[in-house]
Structures are given as C-alpha cells and as structure tokens.
Length: 138
Image (cartoon, rainbow, N blue to C red):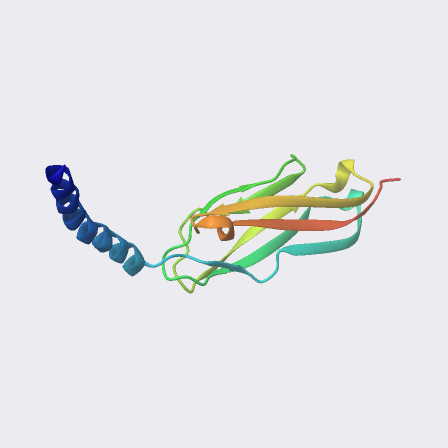
C-alpha cells in the first residue's frame, strides 16, 4: 500500500509541472474572438423579378490569435454564403456575404446562416439572419 501511495505521489509530482507548462503555452498563444458589426439585415420590400439580393456581414477578430471561419452553412439552396477561408489576424476585419434568390418566393422571408469558427465554445458559432418581403412576379 505504501508503494502505491509513493508511486502515485511521484507521478503527481512529475505530471503537474508538465500540465502547468502546457496550460501556460496555450494561454501564451492567445485565442481568437469574433465581433460582428451586425448579425441581421432586413431588405424591406423587394421584387422577385429584380434577381439576387446580397448583403455583406462585416466582422473583426477582437482576439489575440488568428481567427478561422471553418464553415458557413445555410439550410436551403436559395441562400448562398461566401467567405474567405484565410485566417484573419488579430485586429483585422473581413466579411461574409449572403446571397438570396427571391425568384421562387412571395411574402415574408427569414433566412439564416450558421457561422462556425475556431473560437472555443458557443462564442464560436454565430447565426446571421436576412429577412424581407418578396413582391411576386406579375
């Protein structure tokens, strides 16, 4: 029993400094943070015959490590996201563009796109929303 306690204390003494060093290295690297100027846009009344609607959502990396947009996904084919996959340096800005095709719609619409980033936790997922009212073709 004494040997078991001795081995466990020895392992703790050896592993604790290594774990602390790993934590310190992680915190020295910093972490990214994403801040959007806005996360929703209302197009108002639009004519279906006028074609695609486009809106750019601007964001900034407010963190201390590079920010990567991993994916931007929209649940339907009428909304197409576009973004630059290159990492955004701390303090720099970029944008995500959402294009919406209103040709098959009439009335109110609300479309979303889920942005996934390398920011840890829920802060790394942001929902962008576009909305408006489509006036149908005559």
